[in-house]
Amino acid sequence: MSAEYRRARWAVVRHAVATLDPAYFALVMATGIVSVGVGNLGLGSLSALLLWLAVACYVVLVVLNCWRCAAHRSTVAADLRDPGRGFGAFTFVAGTNVLGARLLTDGHHGTALVLLACGASAWLVLGYVVPWTAALSGTNRPVVAGANGTWFVWVVASQSVAVLAAALQPVVGPWTREFALLAIGCWSVGVFLYGAAGVLVAARLMLYPVSPGDLTPPYWVAMGATAITVLAGSQIVQMLTTPALAVTRGLVTGMSVVFWAVGTWLIPPLVAAGWWRHVTHRVPLRYDSALWSIVFPLGMYGVAGYDLGQAARLPIVAAIGQHETWVALAAWTATFLIMLGHLVRALLRPGTRADGRASVSRRCAVD
Image (cartoon, rainbow, N blue to C red; front, side, top):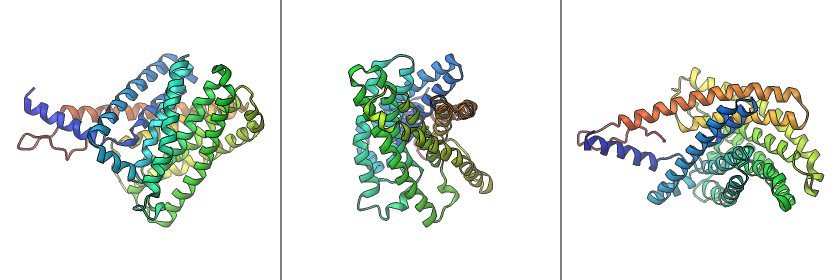
């Protein structure tokens, strides 16, 4: 391997870090929730494999993001000011909590508690920083013009805290009341945020022209946000009874069924939008980190349906969830294989210019 080739490959890696998508933790979210789903299907070995793959991806992404924050602070700040990318930072919150919830099912209570503390803290900080910098700063007017599917990740982040807090509540001893209140509070905030994000995104679609390039994969998060709201609700109603739960159990159960119905209703138009984008208007379908924003909602819909069916005694909903998990597994497999091929091409065959330096015109592996 020549020194020139090594320099070219290292330049590709540095460019990849500099342009890393803030929403790349959707890879962890998707892998973690599909791990839960296949576990519900009785595929324990595959579920464990996906779990540790999710852990590896989480560690790598944390390292890369720390590197990016240290070496490219101005780029990170620009992402937080961008309405189209800033809300992607909430995928770190959701990925952390989804991973914690999956680890909890294997009995890793301490690790899950640490991840909840990390995820909840990040959710609290980002919940004030990102909306202000990306949506409410004086340079972004009108606000609705920048609304897109990534805004629903704020909802997903809030509900992910609720999911993990509710799952931990029965095992935290004297803190059951506090964890119940945290879970119900975050679930309630998530419901409110879904309404707010839904209004803004709908206004964007109705008030401004929509081109095929605008209907990107993150719009699937609109369905994923309903699904994780359902999962959080079903986890909440299965908690140990506390005063907060006693007065909200009926509301949470009813709203969970409503959100499941809304999420189911959203699937056909999302499929139709993809057909309009890629078939009617021939927008090339190639690997992009945003594809994980499709896989996660598919996986979450299956897990949420199964869990709601068990909690509310709705066998049809549970059966739909189980069958849909196979769709999510197929989507995860296809996306992961395409991602691996993209990584190999970018790292093993970096383009070079005549002076021997790496060409960064080619999109990098994690762009």
